[in-house]
Image (cartoon, rainbow, N blue to C red; front, side, top):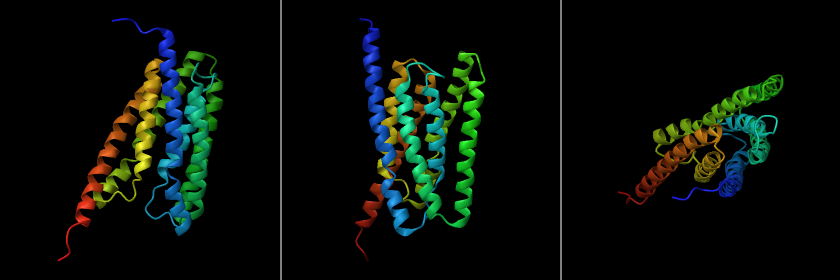
Length: 230
């Protein structure tokens, strides 16, 4: 079997990274219908704000990980997560504006905690003079937050199972998560970066689980709605 040339690996890596950026944009805009509903009803209903808090923290840390200060040749990671941070912050502000008083204080506190934690991470990492140690520390942090972001919909999946309804688990959000994580799984493999391919591999598996759950309960819901009334 012929060996794959470094040039081919580079082309494949860039293609996967660009695809990841494109699918990530789909992920970032997929909550727009949800937030239109929140704005229209002036209520967050049973929608959870936690996925957006996790996503903001993840985007900030992963954008920092992709910077030349931390790792080399990962600029596509920085670009996608910088755009993602802007989207997540916008959603959180809308959520806080429309939430009831208890949720409003909780989300505001979590938002401040995210910015405070990120500031500590940036300042602390720059105080580490050893570039390899800096890379490892931020790499493990980005990996942990990315896994947390992918795992955050587990509570929503539990709600879907309890209510037997997919109303609060938007399809396009689950689909975009799966496509983005799969693209960056390949990007991390082609770049030989375990801090990218390990969490995105987990994200791919969880994305498949979400889609399977969606199709299962959506099908059951349609079947029940077609039953004749007695």
